[in-house]
Image 1 (cartoon, rainbow, N blue to C red):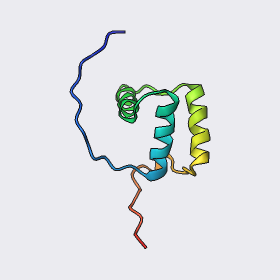
Image 2: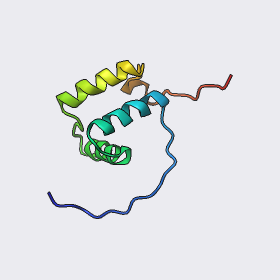
Image 3: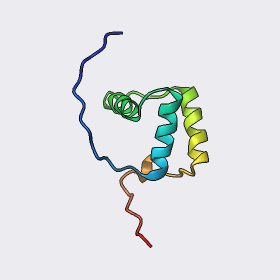
Image 4: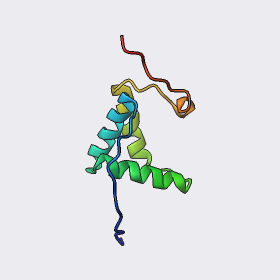
Amino acid sequence: MTQRRVERVQTGVRLEKRLLKVLKAVAAQHEMGLGDLIEGIVLHSFEGKAPFGAETLAFIESMRSAFGLDLTAEDSHKLIEAEDD
């Protein structure tokens, strides 16, 4: 595997709370950082490739259930901020 040198920047991306929990669990399962996981997902997506195999998808489904993540791709452009009580 040929390694590629890149320049990374710190960012203040906001994510849905339960989605972030699932992403962190997947990153931990693969022993990688959250940023590395997100980069991989995005690079696969840009090429129309699935970022995860069957085993990881099963793990993701169990984490979605564990963290109560009921959002789907169909919800992606319909999310609004919860109001503070």
